[in-house]
Structures are given as structure tokens and as C-alpha cells.
Image (cartoon, rainbow, N blue to C red; front, side):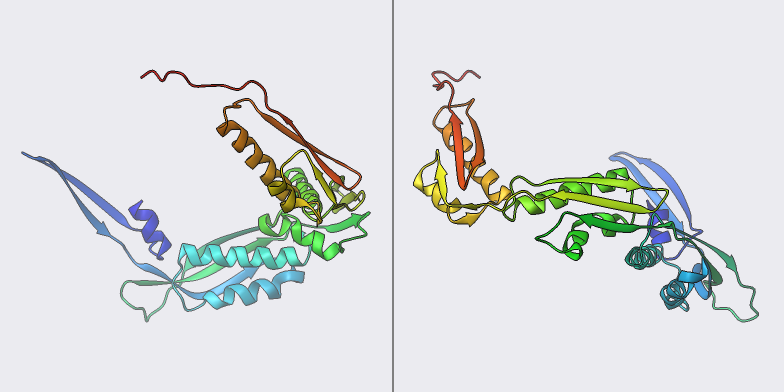
Length: 272
């Protein structure tokens, strides 16, 4: 742990010595830390495809003249991956190495190095949407996970599809279906959307006025409906219906709740 913390601050070759001494009250641990020289970035060299080299240089040249801190380096990696994703490059890889610079003039405790950055752009993808008539491509693209993970694979495509579907269901489209096709060889992702009809809830059945008021005359909102469902179940459980089940469905513009209370339980005795 100590070595890791020192590395985060630019000390890549620390030495840590331990000594344990037994005493009447227990054991004492003595630690001696020799951090070694801190790495100082004198030069930066970038090795990458020509089409994105200027971007990489602009990011990593900012580290020149600074200490080689692992945290700062990681932030720069993330920044580059973000810029590559904006340009359609996903699943990129960034690595580094360094070499010592021999110099007649050096500062005690500071080792000048050349920081070498190696960039693989990954594949360039086109992301397309079909069937969306109520929300623009730009909005749906912002809902995907691709610009958080900087990667595209089956898992990310599935997660993105679920996000888009949830967004629709929270904005008036309870019947929406979203599927996606990943064509990895061609570098294409296609989201196919069947929006279904937009529902403004004009009537709520199966619940009291308190709950109906929260839902009536509003666009269908999955999160709100699920919240009401959860509160209903909690209410009935507090009344002794431990196995209550609450379901709902949309018919026309009516949101209908179906409550199966089940058997009512009464606690007669608590043991223990």
C-alpha cells in the first residue's frame, strides 16, 4: 500500500523496510521508507496513428515539465479515450513507458525521463437509429453507455438498449420495444425502435384518490408508476397482508392497478 501511494506521487522505485519488536504490551512495528528519486517528465513522445496524433500530443504535452504521477497519467488516458470516442473510435488502448535521460545537470532527488505514450485507436463505429420519430438521434446517442466506457461490445449495446427503452417509458411510451444489432466487422451499431403509442393517463383505477392524483393527467412514467406500486405494497404489508401482489396495465388511456392482497397475517406471539 505504501509503495502504491508513493507511485501515485511519482516515486516509482521506493524501498520499504519493516522491523517488528516484541514488548510487554504487545508488538511494535517500525517502518523505514526510502522513496527514491521522483520521476520528472523532461520530454514526451507519442506513438499513434497519424489521424489522431495531434489530439494525443495536445493532451500529453501538458505533462511535460511535471512529475510522473500515476493519477495524473490515468486522467490523461481517460481524456484521450473520451476525445477518441467523440470521433467514433471505441475500444481504444493507451499505454506508456519511460526512459531515463542522461544529463550533466540534474536536481538531487529528481530523475528526468522521456515519457513514451502508445495509442491504439480501436475500431471506428457508426451508430444509427431507426424508427425514432419523437426523439432525435442526438438525444438517444447521449443515453448510450458508449461514451462512459469508451467501448462497444455486446454488453454495452445491451445496456444502451435498456437505457433507451427506459427513457421512452419514462416519457409517455409504455409499449416501446428497443432492439439492437452489432455489426463488429463493419463497425456499425443499429438501434431499432418500435415506439408504440404515446399515452397520457386520463383515468386511474384500482387505487385510492391519493395515489390516483399523482398519476392522472400525466404522461405515462415508468419510474413514477413503479414508485406508486412499491408504496401500495408497503401500505398493504403494514396492514398485515405479507404476500400482497400489485400489478398494473395500460388500457386505452387508463392505468389499471390489480391488487391481490392474499391472506392477512396477525402476529400473536414473538419468540426470542
